[in-house]
Amino acid sequence: MRTAIVILMIMAIAGTAAAQNLGPSPERPPKNTPTQPYVSPQEHKQGGDTIFDATIIPDIPYNDSG
Image (cartoon, rainbow, N blue to C red; front, side, top):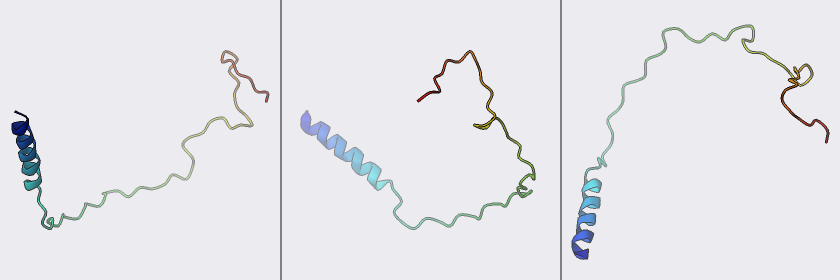
């Protein structure tokens, strides 16, 4: 029984190895360029608090010493 299982495992490994295409791959067509190029906005679209003007939330416990 052990021999049959080993032979079955070897055949499964050999089958998957034989299924691989080891030749050169065909050339892929070039990718399409986007229809509208990305334009970076002049103003920043995100913002928020910095370390100097952060809003303190009193309900969240914290320790700012040390």
